[in-house]
Image 1 (cartoon, one colour):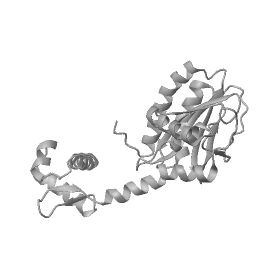
Image 2 (tube, rainbow, N blue to C red):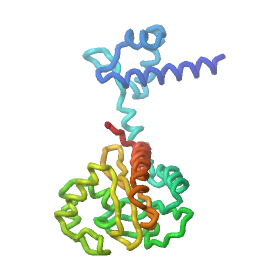
Image 3 (tube, rainbow, N blue to C red):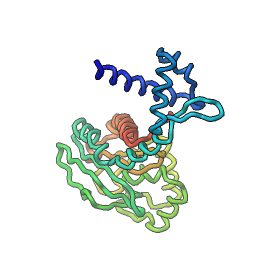
Image 4 (cartoon, rainbow, N blue to C red):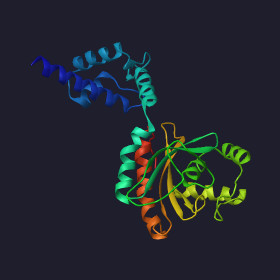
Length: 257
């Protein structure tokens, strides 16, 4: 019986935390008691205990209760512990299973992309990419998906340092054309590599965002151009954008649209 009461008290405490967090200006004891349907003395005892541990604090002027700064400490520890590869892996495996194509997860560093995960799919496809390898940003879908969401001064700096060297006849090498391409990518929410990095290979990628809304990585599907037709890319873009949102959500990003 004592165990049941303890579990019930914990449940009520969590209900109160959830309720208080939904009101920017906080809530009073009476308001909380009415909404949760428990007596005021019980609410006060729970609030006092939560306040003692820093999870709730009382505004001295209004007397209302609001979330305490302990939650900031906990959330920062959670965010620090998030590993992109671990959080993304289930979604990458799902993409591999559904498409049978090569799946990449990449981050950006010093004006280049670095592949941190690669799933080979069930189809035969020879690509130069491998985990740990660096690649240019301007002619890869993973790179362009990231560049499109970086601040313009960062993009300009990368182009200034790295240039837009040609890799295939399809590589975009003119700065004005490339910047327009980035605008288009941001509008669409996905990036394409139409044989711009390797002949015969077409890729589609979407950006991944962290809890601050900053682009930190991207995920792509790569396949031979003969399979990655315009019709198939139209189908894949929907799945990719959904996957990008899900992985970003796991990284703490909250989508406002």
